[in-house]
Length: 451
Length: 179
Ligand code: FES
Ligand SMILES: [Fe+2]
Image 1 (cartoon, rainbow over the protein chains, first blue to last red):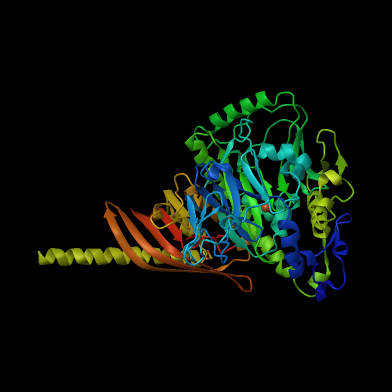
Image 2: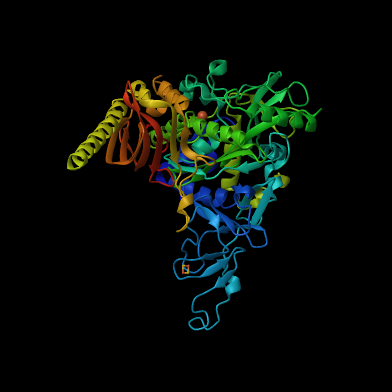
């Protein structure tokens, strides 16, 4: 069990996190011991996002990804099967692969030369006959593979825990939402491809600031992003008064916070007052072809979903990834006070090049460390951290009370609770799940089926 | 013949000197946060690109820097977006630069690679130091390759700028300085 540090006094984790009333001790964001326990209890057990099959289309293709603090390799083996391995040589621990991505039918360790096939088998050991006398059991010393891997409509997820439930059970009611995050704009499953490379950058704050705020904190937008309105960098450029977002659908709808309290997944979604998909609204006036393309896709989607009530929730999959809106936001823990942010950008597989280019450039000016919107998020998440570190500051709670007690179930979105669009319901649900993970001895206590 | 060569050498020196002075002037405007004046030195058709650097195998250097034509970069934009960034900073509400950072652009190793009509291809090194609030420090170091174009009003304009930052994982939380 975790060592109780002096600053935590003898308070239990449950005492630190009162998600029901929205009082949460700053300790859980700044305490080194709690952080170490998160790596074990959360990142060692939950399903984590690893990558997308479009990043490794051919046998031998690999992508160096990451789970928690640790480097992993997403590899397509010679037979075309996908694997996720811990990126460490079984001999003395050297990083087996130090390239970000590439193609290789053999991973040869640069330290003493052990080599592994794309399916993880140890196939080559120097001096095997002479020095090892042929006695080394190579079959027992292959690359360490995740306990479970799931290909969810093209996206790849993995967990180190053999007792974790299936990925779909882990998602629960979030399955349809996440599935739509990987749809093309025509509504077709597995319709996306990922751009290369990944934007990676270090942010001096605890991973939960971005991880739980993004897709959980609509309250920050008006203040944090006030300066973006003048920049007019949305798809429509300076037309329509300029905005950072595209022009929304004209159908009557209401936006809500939507969360799955027991599982910690959720985000924001819009519920339309009528079934189906609304008429296309032109928003790419500055780009030739883009509106034509997206209009056509929209019509196909409308055909597919005719008569169905849609609620697109782009949001967080507990613990540290946000999916939707042409990007995947991944917040890796990198020490208690540092987050390594990874940003993947996505686009319709079949989109013509000018559309892909327009989408890509829009994402680059909006998102990431150079993006006009997110550069300001980084400043706020950064400085909230040191201002919470002090001896006195850390005695205080954070306030997560926005919307406490006002969430309600709604038949249109089974499994979710709704709340006013600006609130902290999502963050409370993540904190609730966080506490469950931190307290649970094993998946027996965490499985949604058993709750 | 000798006169011609001397004449050419002098012209070359003058051009180098002029280009250097232009790059220093740009750096001065940026460090003094005179962004509205700086943006006037940027050509309307500029391509401003900062690729992401990959760790690739020996022999695959062609893939090291992300490609502006189809891949993701740190920046890949034209003048409209750069001008939007200037407007954003000038609101005083762009929190990443409010209160303003102290920024110092050091430009060196200026080499003229090619002269073509009224355009000059120039390579240089940069070291951009950003210091914020009490003790926050970021160092952006790398190479730039510019195409500068003669301009009747400003002397020169930046028609193309490729900024090759020597980092893989960006070691800063954001990039809100111009290069
Ligand atoms: S550490 Fe890899 S071969 Fe020794
Ligand atoms: Fe934001």
